[in-house]
Amino acid sequence: MYKMEIRRSGYTFRRTPKTIRISASPSHKSYVRHISGKTIRVKSSMIPKRGVPGRRGKKVIPPLSPGKLFGYTVSASPASRMRSLNVAIRHSSPLTVFRRLHALATLNKYTIPKAARVILSNASKVRRKF
Image 1 (tube, rainbow, N blue to C red):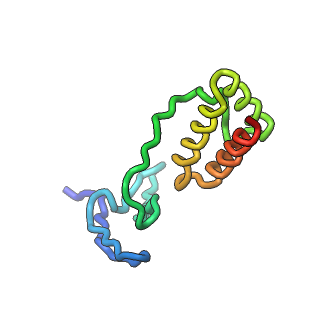
Image 2: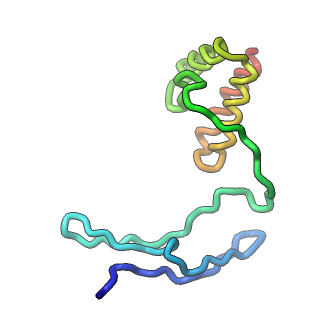
Image 3: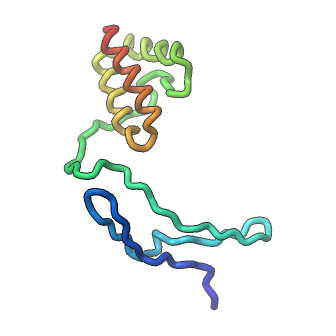
């Protein structure tokens, strides 16, 4: 029986300061999709490394529970963000809100850098205001 699968071959690439070897494995392969009677071949691609080279050890970030910042979202307007942060400060201390914002920015630093910068700017406003 014919299997509709393309196995990715291994390769080596140079990223300063070291050479990274990607071995051939099922998790690094291209694949074929059949959508509306058409065959679409999706090429394999490199998965970006989400970390800083040379950094060792884990950062210990406390678990975040949803709803503690009272509707704070990065996509909202700056006035709306500060309103929700002021509500959060009324329900808990300013230091707690600052720490939650800082943890949120740290978690998004490599995945969504633009959002992390917005969160850090709001955390600095909370720090200056209170």
